[in-house]
Image (tube, rainbow, N blue to C red; front, top):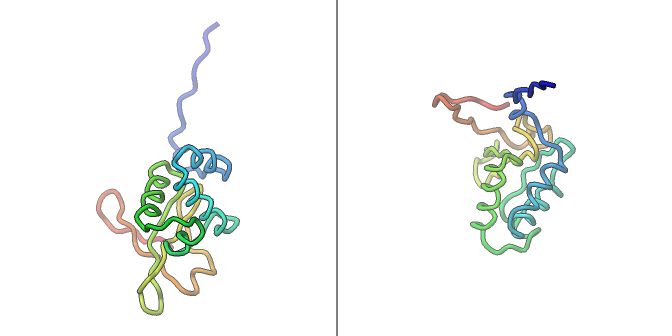
Length: 133
């Protein structure tokens, strides 16, 4: 009996991952990175959005260096379980946190964050700027 294999769906790459899928991926990285993920998860809303400062993540995880936190966040971005965009303060533009989304791409700015921040434009693949609202 001949059975045809289905072709992979190219749209699946853009689909969001469930929190359990993200946790399973995060548990495969180092202990420090895993604690960073758990800190992000504890700060996230129901849609997976959060915007803690690096110093806040340091307090939650008890990791002393900012570099270790940043390395963990980059690892999560590479694995596709966290997306991040720099926020800009409406007030002064200084010490603004990043906006993180666990399990998917950032599609909008949550209403709590919209009161204080705006999203920085991303660079599209072709080099043109693409705004995120």
